[in-house]
Image 1: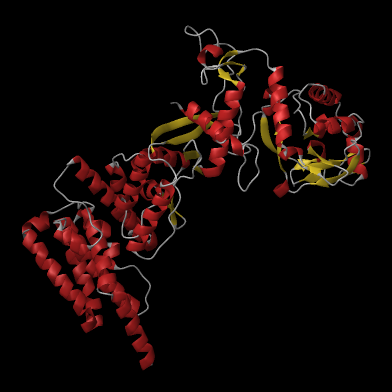
Image 2: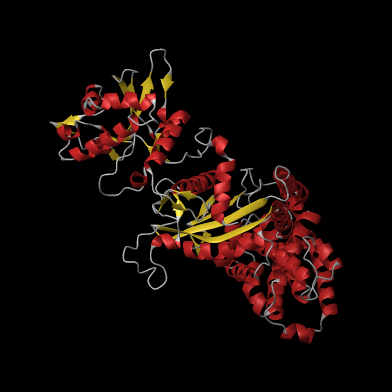
Length: 615
């Protein structure tokens, strides 16, 4: 099925939620949109003005009926059928505003009258029409203190909700009956249904709808405001009056695409609702994952709550995936859609995929378990920043265009189980080398990301039977047991030991500066043996300062150095250049081994406590 069929199916399967106001977004009825009203006018059941209220932003959202023309109006006269701006609803607008727009109100009243006199009329619109025929709306609002005058005309300085001039205010109507039964037309399902039936009765011409296959009224005016309230981009549009698009092939735009009005409304309302409810939007790219029954989906773009141990993290991910997965039949389809706009007026689907729920959750589980380092799976945004970002103001920043380009490459690896491009790993490796000279916090973060990506890349290699290396483990011992400790890996171990010796010394003396191992990290990649010798020389003062406190680390250094010489001759080591990212993984594994298994951090705290006691 296409995305149009899936959205149509979603709308129809979720019909019980149409127009129901709960927490979160509303699935809109056909022929309705959400607008922000500034004024609420309260009428009695006889059509008399009772009171009015100025609405705050929090209470302003209102569901209003619209026509094809009014929903996308820009210039010209296109009144909404019921709630609308003062220029349409107020018969005395020309009295209080220096604009001769009498025809706006006349057009509004003619349209409302046709609805009132139709077989699909409703008591609410009859009351509102009865009141508006008096033509005293602005006068009543002035008397009640909602609108203010500057001389004979509305004061242009006064603003509603800080942005809207008085003359541009949208008015919604409420009916307050004698038995205190308050009618909110913007929440009345019977009124929604009344308008839908009335509007359908005015649409006589029928054509073939390419989506539903039915002979129904078709439209070439499709909704906007798909991603958010001020979104002007349309997903389907046709405004080529010169037929340039169709020249030589098709005679008219209807031959390109013919879609029923009802079909279009259902598709766009479902898409808007899903994006607002569970879509992810960042850097101009919208990512939507859904299923037709509207069962909440576990989404990779959401962060897993931070935990303290690897075991807790694994359980949390497993429970989260299992908790969502058990709500949906494994055979049901899950839809993945990417949307972005090249211009303000055009929205494009740049990626769409359907897969079974079982495969979707399997892919998610694999990503969290394979692109992972201890209790950390990097967020897609973090991966892209670490790989392609530039350092600005203590963090890595990536441009929107670059972000969107690479997120579209990364998501298939996460959601569809595709092979992770090795470019991501190599780019983050370059960033690790750069950040070692710039920012220790970002440097350590980039190492975490690199190790997680390298693990995923090793799983991909294993699945494809590429190379001889095994899957990277998160511990030093496991990598040694699996024979993953290459020369590059072991050199990384040695650099980590030197880094920890100096960091240990600096921490005890309460000095806050970069270690020599960190400063020479980039050179270590290019000229490892010469740089390692330099780091060794620079570490002597710190070893002397620590004395017996460095014995554990020095013993470890001796063991790793012996292992290195068993793996390769001195001449080969001297000629070694351009270390692979195995070097960083070796560094990370040894650093964590020292901190967690040798418990050097606790030892430092004990030393500091002893110093304080002696003082």
